[in-house]
Amino acid sequence: MLKKLDKYFLDIKPLFDKGGKFERWYPLYEATDSFLFSTTKSAPIAPHSRDAIDYKRIMITVIIALIPCTVMALWNTGYQANSALADLGAVPDGWRGAVMQIIGINPSSLISNMMHGALYFMPIYIVTVVVGSIWETLFNLLRGHEFSEAFLVTSLLLPLTLPPTIPLWQVAVGVSFGVVLAKEVFGGVGRNFMNPALSSRAFIYFAYPAQMSGDSIWTAVDGLSSATPLTAMVSSSAPNPISQIDVSWGNAFLGVMPGSMGETSTLACLFGAGLLLITGVASWRIMAAMLLGAVVTTLLFNTMADASHPLYSIPIHWHLVLGGFAFGLVFMATDPVSAAHTKTGQWMYGLLIGFIVILIRVANPAYPEGVMLAILLGNVFAPLFDYFVLRANVRRRVLRHG
Image (tube, rainbow, N blue to C red; front, side):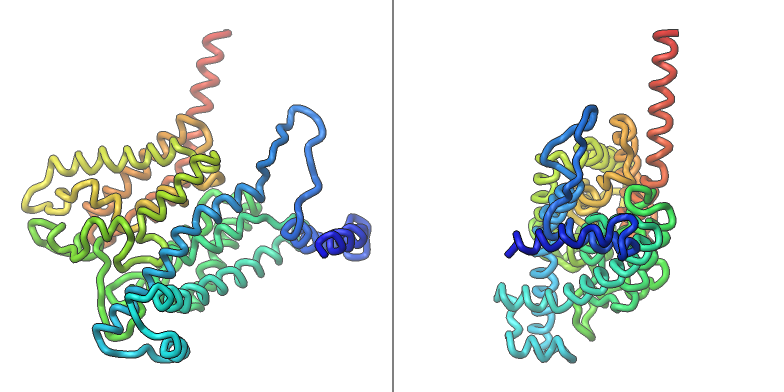
């Protein structure tokens, strides 16, 4: 069957080539053919390297690395909702309620939790894919560019960073902003200076803060408020902020707590990090530098902690498992397009992000989560870091051979 389909695509290819009847629609043809099979293009001569890793396989590797976070997003979203409903003795309204009455609301059931989580995650994911694909198709057809697998990663990253109750129309507006204004207006794939998924999330956050923050958006249950541990900690004036967290460190590490759907589990992020590092897709320097920057900054604030600045006393092992720190470190900061590319630049880039994350968390209680803004700021500075590194290398060579 696949052989016949492949032969059919080869037979109709001349219609979409330059000068063919459907030349204008070549990007759609190429995207479908590349998705179903594999590109036939190769570099025949030196100095191009030729191996089994192409752009498609890099993107697929990232998607595979995101699977643990996606599974955890489904389970934890369903678990938080089922637990809340069980405590209230209530049944959700609308079509989700009708489905869950058939499946059963049971926080002890893996199937019940996964299905309930999917009822929130899948609509957000579908809207992201459909709207983003429409914009990608439009720009590719106008420019004659080939489709890229990069949007498959963006379309999965964005839903994982959102709360389960986000209105779908806001998802559509957000992904439109990220794809168009953070990516396509700069030339498309490989030319965006900021991470499109993070840009989309930042736009939604600042345009519609009520649906992206607060205590009533995390459990997907009307009438129940449940603050994330990070929000509860930084919004308290207690001498010991850790005492305000009703989640154990172990559960925070596993991700059994309210939060953005795919960002809660540090363990799931570590599985993804292992795959990305083993395959060489992500930079270990960026991960190490961001971690080092956060550790050093936290220890520095710890030395200045007093009664008037209780947030300064938050230990590093809590910072690492709360909010989206692990998710941002593994999947967002390491974006190969918007991150720094030189080795020294990657260290500077990661250190800056780690420093800004902790600075925002402990010095700006009005905005408890600093990962998103820190990475976007790092994206802006990444080209500057690379520029200074390259200029320094040029100066050294001139002095050496001058």
